[in-house]
Length: 93
Picture 1 (tube, rainbow, N blue to C red):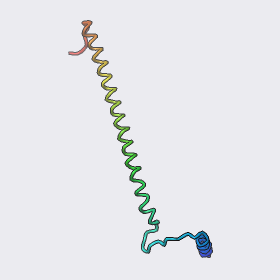
Picture 2: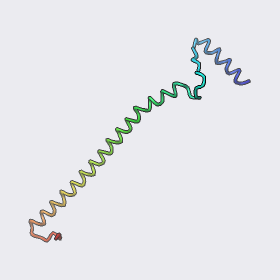
Picture 3: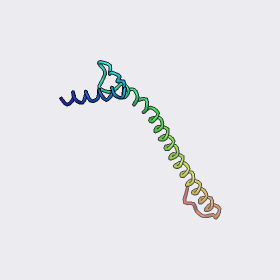
Picture 4: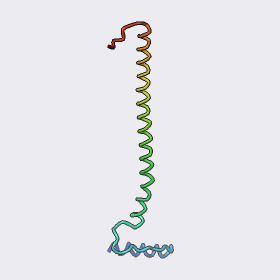
């Protein structure tokens, strides 16, 4: 009973506002056709954006690690070079 009254209100409202209702094709899933196609097309660019951001952040992180390791190696070499110049034992054989 409730659905019949609600249907009548919707039909009269659409008729007053001259809204055209596009019927859903038979044998279609419960999803609206636009939902079925629209969301996948909207998600594609978002996936690539997220992937590109992830890759760029990963590269920045890896570059930072390499830069930090290089900095430590240079410090060790400078320290070792100073010890060798002073004539001290470096502790390496």
